[in-house]
Amino acid sequence: MNLLGIRQQFIKFSGRYDLATTAVSEFDTDNGANFFINAGMRFLDRRFYHAKTVGRRFDEVAANTWYLTFQNCRSILAVWCNSDEERWQLTRYDYDTIRNSYPDLVSATDTGEPKFYCPVWVRSIDATDIIAQGAFFNYVKTDDDGTYNGILWMPPTNDSYVIETIGHFNFTDLSTNTEKNYWTTVAPDTLIKAALYQLEVSYRNTEGAKDWLAAITLEGQGMEFDAVEQESNDAYLRE
Image 1: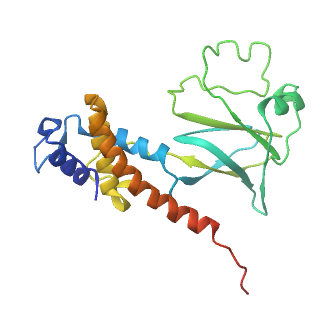
Image 2: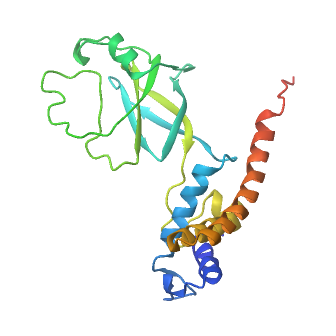
Image 3: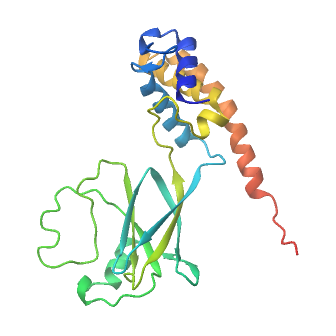
């Protein structure tokens, strides 16, 4: 099922025919329904651990690089570095440890293979003077809209590498009728219920919201059980 199919069912179950209009096919033009569908999807992402909760992204970085930013990541679990000859996991430290271990200017610090990393808060209140006294190892994103996370690693790269970031990633909001993702294809009924739950919350209908939440929880727990069973199952090396 795609976003159009989810919206059509959401409209029929909710009776809110005003939240979509018809241009070519039934309810094919959003008029507010997508807001509740995407709110329901974000709710499911945060509430349940499932087979697609953990995601990986791969970013090629150039020499003399020490940070990376990306969107839709709730938490960072591990960072790996790939060269053209080998692959290794970076050791995580907190930001203060890395900052105290590398106190010099960027220009005065030797480059090398990345060994350590830390998550960084990329939100900037005012970065006007961030390099007024020289470029140190820090980073803020001046155009952060609240959706960005980041990592900082040391030492700065001495060559081009591929940085692999493993973490809990949200699915991006659905906007076009043909879009699909895990929730729309594997658990469309759960997504529809989550959208209906968000609609009831907007009404401040406590009893109605509780009913939808109970149904969502029952289905979501099944997904969690599947994910946990797979991860906890003993793995054997076979020749």
